[in-house]
Length: 159
Image: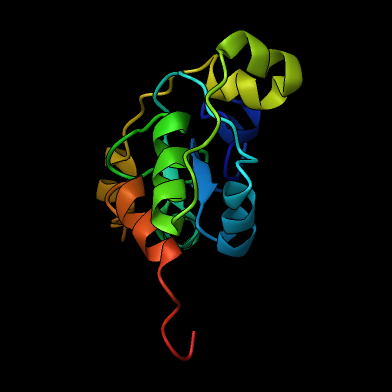
């Protein structure tokens, strides 16, 4: 249950473990390349967020189902938090796109309130230690920069 708050009744009363706490990236390279090329993903200054490459999230979910304890929440994030601005700017650079538009937080809240709620209005510093120790899970991409480089590179043959 990616994205469910760890203290949620859904987690506490669940007969299964829950993988929580991150923003996903990586599976949408074609769409992101096009959006970033036309500067369609604005950035604003904001807090640190937990990120995880979609392949790492899938591996952690499998590990939670195979090795996790019922009712236990596991933070599925990479090893280093990053701001929305840092991640989107790194994606633009990796794809050879122009830098993203920088908006003041108040304007982002006005035009995209949902996105602004976590881009500007949140800072989530959480640890993936429990997922690593109890599940034996290790993110393949230690931080978003490693994952973004992989996202932007051509896919190997057979994939």
